[in-house]
Every structure is written in structure tokens, then in C-alpha cells.
Image: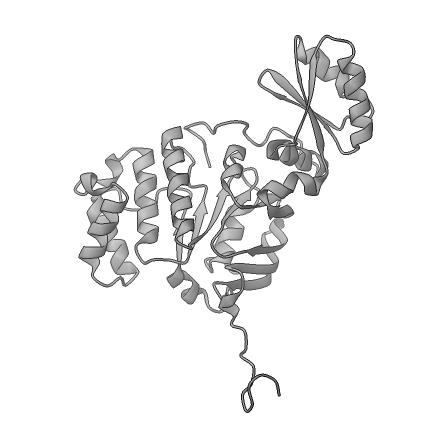
Length: 335
């Protein structure tokens, strides 16, 4: 016997662990494997970016994690509850924001929030709804039909509805798709605010410029989790080294560089090329030899997340290494 005399040591509670912990999570639709044996841990209180191209399995994985979809194989726990057998308990503690606006367009903002508050069995519905509208700047639209709101305000309304019951975990599926850049900035500021309050956020997206907003990143491609870890450590995990090249006629240079030893990836970003490889010595030798020609400027830079993800896609059989948008997402994105 350990601990104080006559007492047994306390048994750790499952809810003391990560917000989400799953192993071998698998889902098939007919012969297609949508999610292929995914292992994932999401620490509490962080913003966790779940990245990958459209159709990569992000939404299916999130739905299994919150108990909306039963895995064919594997399992795990969300907020201490089994995703297979305790889905109702999980749903009580999470806020789930689907990719498409799912509230009622023919109800006002206030009516939608009151309806959702009753669905969540919130006490003092009237008080909670009024406070939530004020916190999210929705009070001036309180009596406006939801369908008449802009995309950004619909997004804000959806997020407000998710937060009515004070969830401990937010599962946000492509939440910034189809909204303007200002609305995206406002959304991420709100997510960071919720993080400071101790709420964990799992945010799925295919927009690489949003990756820098996340504390942790998991990258999924064709149903398989390729890499996961702290956002700033991902490039080092992959071991990719990068030089930036600027100058005239980049198209011709790009074609020539692709054939040189030590260069594994050449990607055009606006008016520069990102030239990358995993063998630093060989890549540096090529870069210095090319720079000696004096026609282009070569600058050694830290490898960015976009470089890493394009590299991972190409190494895993992608037919389109441009499947991930570069730079700010278009306001009309498909999510």
C-alpha cells in the first residue's frame, strides 16, 4: 500500500489527460478509406490546427472525435468520455461549428440563440442570450433574420451559438470558408480569446496562412496523418532546408533547377522561388554555385509550413502539389 496509511493512491481520471486522445481511428465508406488509422492527442487549452486539402478526411475525423460518427476501427476519448459509448456526454461539453451555416435563416439572431440555448438546456436563457449577443457584437442584429446577415456575421452567430453552454472544447470545421479577410481576422482573435479562457479549439482548415495561428498542427492527406506536433517544430521534424531565389525569368530558372542534384522541390511564391532539399550540404553547394552566376539573388531562409506541406504531399503521391492555397484564402473559398 502506498500513500498515507490506510488509503489507496488516487486513480487518475481520464478527464485529467488530453482534451482528445484517439488511436487507430478508421472510417470507410464502401471501398473508400476516408480516415486511415489516425492517432492523435490534443492538449487542453491550445489551438490545434487540423490541416489538409479538401477531401482529405478532416471532417470525418472531427465527427468521430465528437461522437457524431462511429469509427469502423479504433477509438479514444474526448474530454474523458469514450467516443463510442459516451457520445451524449461528449456533446454536452463541446461546441461544434460545421463548415456550412446550419442555423435557421428564417429566424432572427435572437430567436436562433434562444432556440440553441434551450437545446443545450442552458439556465436563464434570456439572460445568457442577451449577454452572448453583446459579447459578440450581435445585439445590433438581434431582430434581423439570420439569412440576411453577411457571411462574416453568420460565422460570428454560429460561433456564438457554440459558446452558449460554456463548452470546454470547440470543434470548428472549416470555419473561415467563404468569408472576407476582415471576418477571418476577427474570428481568429475570438478563438485566441477563448484559448486564454482555457477552452481548447480544434480547427480544421485547408488554408496554410492560418497555420501560423495555431499552437499545434496535425496534417492529414488522403485519410492518413502525415505529421503532427508544435507548429514551430514541424519544419525541423521534416528536415527540409530552403533558399529563396529572386530575379528575372524565374520560369526558365525553375525548370533548370528541378533537374539539379540536391534540389527536391522548387515552388513559385509570387516573385520568388522557394528551393528546398533534405540534404543541407548538397543544397547549399548548388545554391552557392548558382549565386556565383550573378543573375539571381539567393538567400537562405527558414523553411515555412507551406514548403513543408507541399513537400509532404508530393512525397505521398499527390498528383497536384498545389492542392493547398498559398497566401490569404479567397473570400469565396469552398471549405
